[in-house]
Length: 131
Image (cartoon, rainbow, N blue to C red; front, side, top):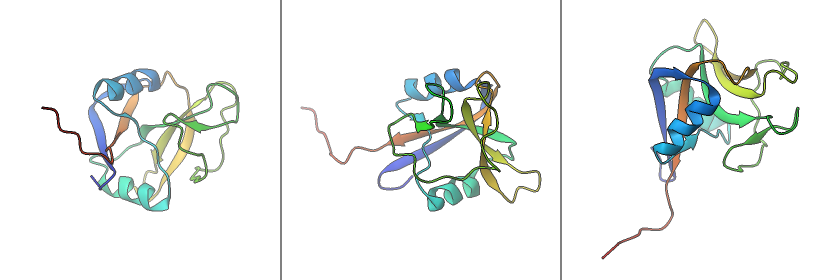
């Protein structure tokens, strides 16, 4: 965890992208957004198991090649393994770990594929007290 968010690595079950997102939301989070190179490195270094892939919250399900994050974070940082190549069939994005476990890059994948996933809980900047 940091001051603003926590990442949860779910490795006890493999789910489709949609079911993984539902699981995260029921837990008070959403599929992970990765905003910059430092967050990418942090996630890779904390992965509890070697991949090969983990769902993250990036997709182009609404319009082909128009990727967006589930929480509305601007799609500025990019870390593709090559380039998105799945066309209209592969609309969800995994964090792909190469076989040597040296790189963690993004890869578009079939949304129905079952894999581990990463949730991100955003901490509020406000402290609430209920009386």
